[in-house]
Length: 231
Image (tube, rainbow, N blue to C red; front, side, top):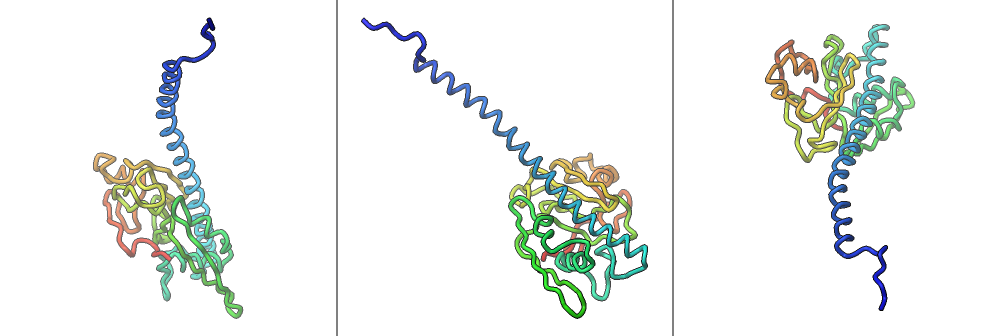
């Protein structure tokens, strides 16, 4: 008569081990997903910041040299800068960015931008053409705006509005903000509206930022002319 091998697993023991592994996995997967999203938010934050730095340097040079060709997006006139393609063309023409930079900087998870440029040999002006879906939104800020006016945000965010679950990038998992003064923020969905600050507009403006033209403690609403249209 053969003796039972004491080192072998019984079916019950095997099922118990599988159940334990499944329980541990159920805890681990959300944590891994959250870490991945946070990493993607940081990546988009870096992209928004790089785009902002190009715009900041261009505007600073324009102020220093009193050159109307080097401005914040809301300060251009005749013709006005109304699209992200227009503003990107200014940055490329004035050598603050390369056309090849734009696809990376303006994209995000689930939001891919293509960029091409055509340079006029006689004027040196590069016209940028953007295609696809933007991962970033840039507001038409002006030189006279205060430091906490928002320059750019991830495209899933509409000012003082709850995050939509399905909009790229990030849906309602979070959003990023880049302010005129150089503050770059990665925020959670409960930070998206003034309600998350007990309805206190001043606290919301301090934490998230203001729209151009807003007074302290008064919240405006984002409209089609608040930001640069895509493309």
